[in-house]
Amino acid sequence: MTKRLFAVLVPLIATVVFLTAQTGPGWVEAHRPAAERLIAESQSSDFAWQRLAEVTDAFGHRLSGSEALERAIDWAVAEMKKDGLENVRKEPVMVPTWIRGRESLDLVEPIRQSLPMLGLGNSVGTPAAGIESDVIVVKTFDELAARAAEVKGRIVLFNAEFTNYGATVAYRRDGPSRAAAFGATAILIRSVGPTGLRTPHTGATVYADNVPRIPGAAIPAEDADRFQRLAARGVRIRVKLMMEARFEPDAQSYNVVGELRGRELPNEIVVVGGHFDSWDVGTGASDDAGGCIVTWEAVRLMKKLGLRPRRTVRVVLFTNEENGLRGGTGYRDAHKAELANHILLLESDGGVFDPAGFGFTGPDAARATVTAIANLVKSVGASDVAAAGGGADIGPAAEAGKIPAMSHNVKGDYFLIHHTPADTIARITPKQVSDNAAAIAVMAYVVAEQGLGQSRTP
Ligand SMILES: [Zn+2]
Image (cartoon, rainbow, N blue to C red):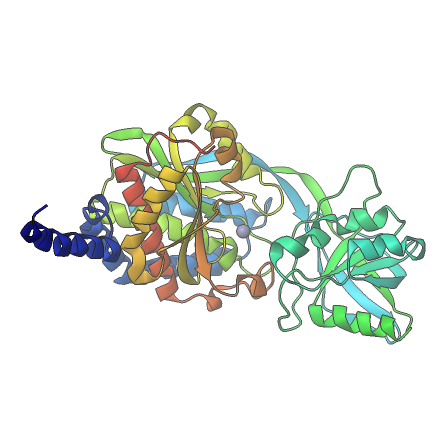
């Protein structure tokens, strides 16, 4: 190489490297005009926030088996048709019908006082007169086992401080059966969430097969710590728990599906969605009406702008995530024959707060592609692609079809309000809804346009 050529080439290469680092590879930049249109359209109105307000205001909570859920599903079908989505339909799924009924928790000793509580979802009820027992306070399953001799005939309080959801949800899920194995009459848990405003959090419990089914309820962190202090002082704690909780026969429900059919490869599918059911407290705005609305909005934006990608983008509002996952397993079973044609599954079920980006589980080449695409949503703060992604509803299909899976990630206090009466739209701004919808629209559009190669997850 001559000195002169060297002098020309080095700055040229440096410039190309610099530009590539600032933007993305050429194939990504080719999609930037479409991405900018999607972002601008989403940010130009509060349409999706208003739609989220409508569903949460009009129908309230959407527990599986409730009339409210089915009314909301019919409304979503009608609205998707109004949006001009294609193949809008309800796909039947039978769902469990768990009914909370009336419930209460009263402190009996050392003083009489009514306490805030929420029964755990799927819990059995108490006898009509309630269960009155002394309380033993433990922090861990190990402490429970170590003090097994003290458990019989008592109510166990698991006071496991919230660190993260994955670490502490085990007490809600397994607490009743673990305590019943040692003869407990019922359990209480410290709510699975950070300390709020004396807020109890519900959520599903799961009974083991080989032990008696005892009732379980959640109390606020503040009350759990109070019980811990009383116990440390050697004060006798006695409570009366009353819960009418029960199951009724399974009910008919549906996954809602709408599409924008691909212009060249309509049989290849990108799925986006969330779960339309919720717990029976609050209005399930963050968990997960918001996830449904922003993924649905992503498809509506493409339709509105005439951006029809090469492959089909399908929005799915799954039913019954919270206490059965029948929507997710139902989707897998109903679409078994076409799972091989699904190229990406994206779920939004972590709230709709300030965007962070996505999480991705799939082959390295596909990860490189979605990471490059995420450059296009840097302006809304959604360019991060975390090490793993997925979601409860897309999990069964992702596993069965070895399909790359993506979560929609946000920065916010999701677990502060998770499964509580405070899960309302009051926590969500129109800008957050628009920015997240834009990010999902760009990701889904470009993946549907570009593809992720033939790769399956390992
Ligand atoms: Zn959820």
